[in-house]
Length: 248
Image (cartoon, rainbow, N blue to C red):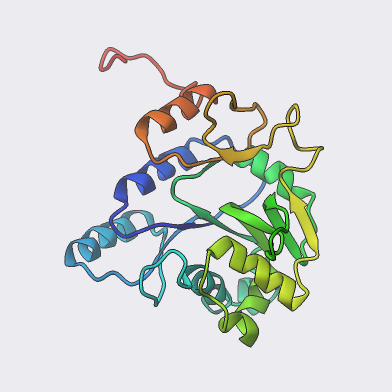
């Protein structure tokens, strides 16, 4: 899971680390990396170094920080070189790679439940935005998954390398369309996943929309109040224990 973030976004990373640590156990290995481009500020270099020393979950790419200027390409294309062919140089290191943002939270059990039944080849999974107005179908940038073979293809494709600028989620859809890849399209908006016709990966819901019980992810949680409301709905603090040392 690659979470695209910025050097100075220490608090969002801290929040996500806490939430990930408190997730129920799952029968899958989920490795999380916070993905940054080159750091230019001395304060960020020092403070991010502390994060690396403590958590070892930072990936710094050789690129200039950007949102739609090729960072997503830099992320995907770097992975085969960073992780090689898996243990002892054989096999593949991961079945899937996810790109997401630091204002999105995932419910790991529901994520694993969805991905467990997916094909391990040519997979393009996420919140599907249908093709329209000359754009291909694509998965919304809140969080989408590619199978490892597609990541290897991205890293080796000259066509992809020459088309990296633009809205990052639509650009990925264009790569797959133009390369004839990603034929196993799996949408979290599929009827068998939806709850009472409502998507299970979605932006923070303003009325009349609401959270749904079998949610996989919620996006646009930059504000403390929105994040706290989301966590209350999913009862994330259920394990909180009373003590004479504090009261809430």
